[in-house]
Length: 394
Image 1 (cartoon, rainbow, N blue to C red):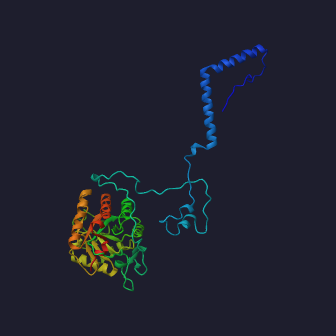
Image 2: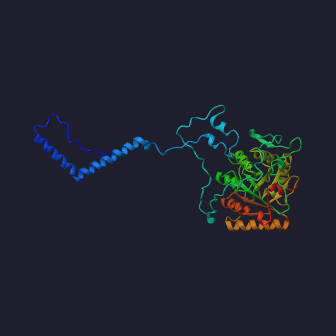
Image 3: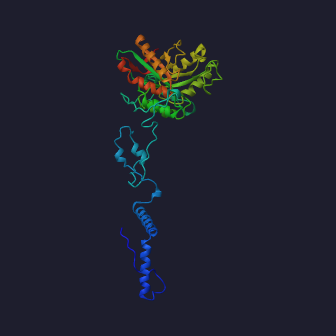
């Protein structure tokens, strides 16, 4: 941009009286232009004027960064988007809004793309592996027709179908043994912490069985998500421990000394919290499982509903006329990566010696991370990963 100073005098009410005065004025103007301070002020003025013109051309900086809006057609081929997603966004029979300036909101991912290494001393932050895809696809959505009956509070209860089908069979993950020793693992305590729950569902192999706390908010949604990733599901039954009530598993804890009808009433409330689980598992229960009367009531209630019972090892001496399995060891009594790895190796040794082994763990971040790493190399070590339902026997 070229700028020249006008040789005309500034606007005034009276004209100069003579040509001599004009000459003096021109001399004063030239002297002012030669002054370095006045020149610097003029350069600053020109710079500010240029910035103002640039803002007028490119937009208002106070309105924030440019926003990007993507047409729905550009994401319509994404594999994991369920049927009906477009209608849910724009409404049935409606059309997408014109592609005007807007924003594309990205979902809040539970992991960073490049997380820092886990710290075993504090049970570790979960690493950020890619999600493990199910080799056989999602399990059927729950409820399956014929397997539910009305339950308390508007919920549903599992029932044996008229044709004899049971939840223990229908909701279990299909499994075909290939002759190698089998190893199964149950990860429990899910549904209470959204981040660790999503980590277990999305990063553990689908053969890992997941168990959910009955008090979890949005329980059915978590179970549905787990099944959509291929995981079979257990529902946790809080049972009386030896140090109850100092250690209280909640208002619907099954108490060993309760009357059978009270135990059944609590069980029905617990079972009506969601559907899609193939059986129950214990949460605590060191006193409850030692009571013959209490366990008989519990087992008969599960039999009438067509459910299995998988426990963490505390009820290993209990049989019964329902599909049953007990864990051979708890893998994370000590919350350190090295200790968990050691327990998993012992689980492998047990499977190699007996043909199969079942482990139990809790949804701690370090547990989820170590199980994921362990399971990735299990097949190469000559063992087959199996769901817990494949261990159940009547």
